[in-house]
Image (cartoon, rainbow, N blue to C red; front, side, top):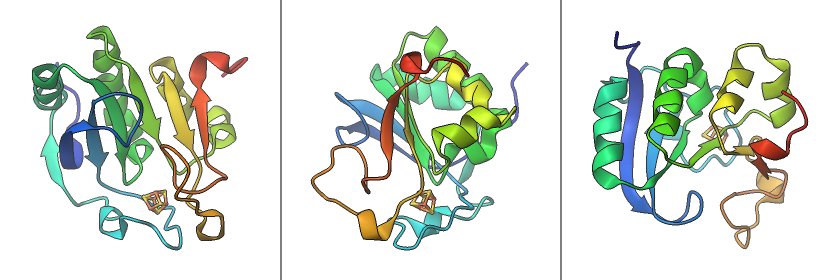
Length: 156
Ligand code: SF4
């Protein structure tokens, strides 16, 4: 059975800025972190974007045949609907990066959020901190944010 729909702002084909290689980046609507200096405040509205089913999103991903990044907004705001998509992305053999405003410690401490670690290969964590903004950083906006290899986590 098809799960709940996800609210998607846009899907970008072939980006090189959201992880290694050419990737399909899915921008999910909704973010409650409201970081000062956010690059994308129009993404904050959880009711924004277009509702899409897992199979509709997977059709785009499979057509592109590129690895996948979830970003936004904060994809984890839609965790229940996101998990079936994350599972399917992995079942189809793609590498999966997940950008989130939560820290990895917050994710690990949350019964609901930590389930994404069953599927994500890499998590880029933490809120954007304007005072720590550094344009020389690859794949992240401020130096507090970390690129975390999920396999390297001892337990979650
Ligand atoms: S977590 Fe990202 S999308 Fe959300 S407010 Fe912060 S910078 Fe913006």
